[in-house]
Length: 385
Image 1 (spheres, rainbow, N blue to C red):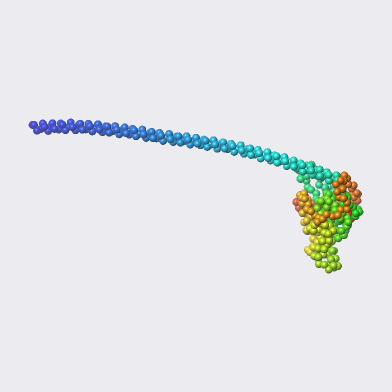
Image 2 (image 1 turned 45 degrees about the vertical axis):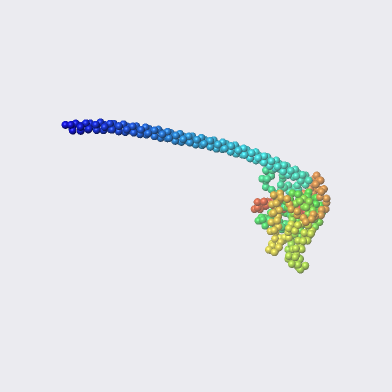
């Protein structure tokens, strides 16, 4: 009996201790869970605060980025407006400069044209245009644009004593430039006059001032009239040549009579003519109209090339080169010509017949050529395009 009671009491104490331990354990577990919950809450709060900080930082960066972009766009827009203003100012300055240039060029053209008109009027006053040239002289008007757009006549004179070969030379020149004229269209203009007309009369009566180039044709008989004419040409500053025509006859005479070679004869003829004319050597041409000799000498090709170059230079209004080795002798005081208020046209009534001819030469500058031929100094045989 007594032993069983003791065991029961012992078990009772164990149950109480076990319950107490369980209670304490539960309390401890509850405390631990509470601590864990609190720690988790705190961790969550920290996480939320961190995320909020990150969100705010990202938002701040975005705001700063947007502000930077806006500033950049504003600066770019301002620079664009500044560039636009600068471009407009530059364009305005360029327009103003162009306008000033145009006005200056207009004033310059006006002054140049005014000077040309005044010079032209003085020329016509001092040297009246002969009747046979009036249709073919390049008039100068006050309208510079109209003058520039107008086709120019080119006046080339072939001068020399009767029988020197002017007609044959003209035919050869036309043939060289591909102009084939029927015999009835060849020029036949004649005018007879004295062989001793002074240089002043050449400039007035024959209108030499209105020619772009003059060619004196001689067959070896260099006359006093030729000297007078050369003096007038030198005074007037006209581009000129001298052609020794029929040079094949001189070659025959040199070979048969003197025993000279072809080269020696041609050199002798050239030097003799240069001494007589005092022209520079390249302005003297030795020619023949007999084309069978052209492969050896006397071809018109070089002369036509030289003539074309001179005409083109005249059309461009280039200053003529110095043509003479020394000035030719003058038979009158040429300074007196500038003081003349009038020139009496003494030769117009001598013209028996004038035939006009237009030449269509396929060349941009050398559009047409006019020839005026002289028989016995004041005698004229002429061709005008």
